[in-house]
Length: 189
Image 1: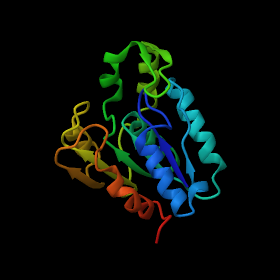
Image 2: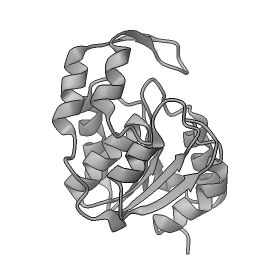
Image 3: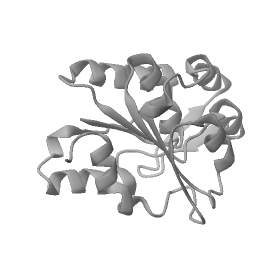
Image 4: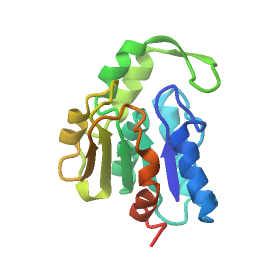
């Protein structure tokens, strides 16, 4: 099972989520993919993912992009799971503080309020450190215009790391890594 956690303002309609789902469908693994719209509240987002993890008969692999990578780290530490982190928001409370106010969801254009209380929730769930780096695969592009990839490289020292020159925050070479992600998750031999 892959549990995909999207980024801030993003959703299940993101191209990374859709292309991973399409690849899994093509391989007959579509039932092993879960991605839902995460609530703005970090507590609610983690509760939603926790509930999905509890429904899994075998240990799922988390795949998180940006803020979803921050959430995936929290959940991987809480449940002892493997996680693929794509341009993760390492300093989420700090980097997201610039977004306090009215925001819109990228795909639905629905407005939502992002508040200081939401930042406090993110801060409250933060994993202080990763305990077993071998459970993690960090994927970053150095051209990320939103987050400093070097912070992620440092945070996930000892983990498998794919650091690609250029690109941007969307992780432009995502489609090249779909099958390797499925191998990492144990879904492809």
